Length: 308
Image: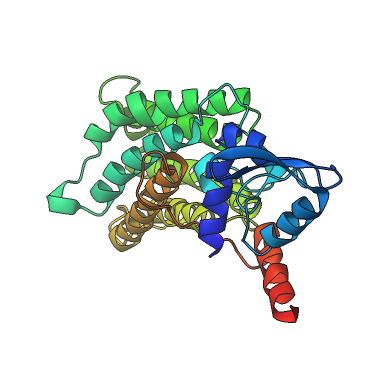
């Protein structure tokens, strides 16, 4: 129920025509309505009755913005962890699905390699994806989030775009010689230590973002939770090495597993932002936490229905 209500809100706010048909303030003397294909004016009493019914999910005002709130609930498809402004009049498209998709694909490939899928041990193929898609495209999506006024989306997507660019620079074979310089001057263990600290820094940053998703949706929180664990385990695998001084393989594979979960969670949130009633036969569930604004609102509606 929570997921359907959330996605309906977002779908309806993309339909300004519907809002023009039904939208009036609660104190207005009349409102527009459609009856048998003909437009007529609602009386004040009819509007008050429809407004009351809409609180329980019924009537012509149930699925439109009635003007009582100019804020929409948290939604991973918009990369918004808290209440945010109505986007129906926004001139820009939603850049979040693009950034999420870029992050998801790059993370998906690297995580499979970290898990030694099909015996692949070297992440060289990820360098190209990290430069082109996970890096450049995600960075651009972050800048577009800045243009539409989404601080969280701009911070997260731009930062992870920078992560993939820096990751690609570190691992570019024969290019910047970062890894080779460490090995030649101090040995492979010094590179492992430096790379482990690099990953732990991203673990701290992801934890900061994770805190901001605690009052959002389950899918949104799950994305940052699994990503946080992935950074933590991968960093530990480089810092706490095995007896031979090499990367701790079991911990490294565990990090790859959580990275894989994060990739699918990013794709899931991207699909939630793309799919609506104009292109999909179903709405993507994005259940809200009970303690979120939307969750508390739904509990209040249940309580009101129970008392009625």
